[in-house]
Structure formats: structure tokens, C-alpha cells
Image 1: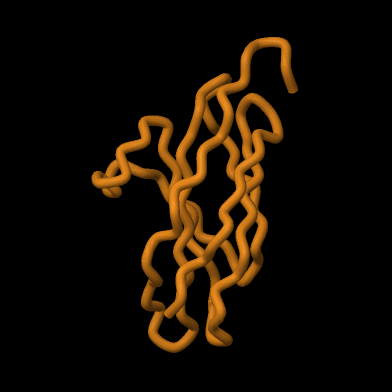
Image 2 (image 1 turned 90 degrees about the vertical axis):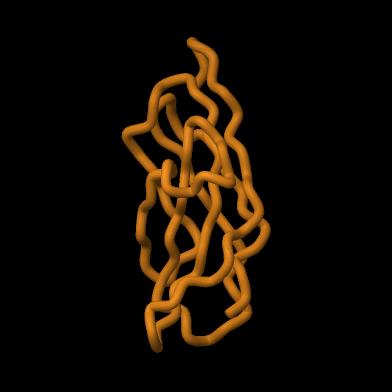
Length: 101
């Protein structure tokens, strides 16, 4: 199953971010899983938090640490067997400074 691509991250507020991506080129997508981490260690994915979303290509992730940078990856989930695709490339948020947003 193809991997989601062109992952983009935008800090919507000090404690939330909007994540967008291009869909997998596969018709049987049940949804997506977003992985995010304040301490970006892509090789240690067990330390990343996750959010499952439906078959959409935009999601808001809330309850983040204020003014911190995050790394984000996305995987597609198959409707047939709930199998997950490979991870997308890592996208990063900007660190918000106090007084912005």
C-alpha cells in the first residue's frame, strides 16, 4: 500500500497543530494514523504519540506542549485488513515563541 506523501504541519495555536497530507494512491483506505513527537527520534517510534483519523487528509492534533516543536509522520490504514502503510517522511512544526498565534 502506498505511503501518504507531502505531509505538512501548521501550528494552529500554542497547543494545537493542523496536519495535512496527500492521500495514498490506493482506493481501499479506511483512515490514517498520525504519529507525533516533541522529541523527534524517528528510529524510536514507540515513544511517539498517535491519533487515528478517518479517510480524511487533514486533522487537528490538540493538547500539545505550548511553544514546542514537533515531528509528525502519517501512515495509511487499509480497509481490507487494517494493515498500515510505511511511514511518511517526517514533517516538522515551527517552535512558537510567546506572543505569536
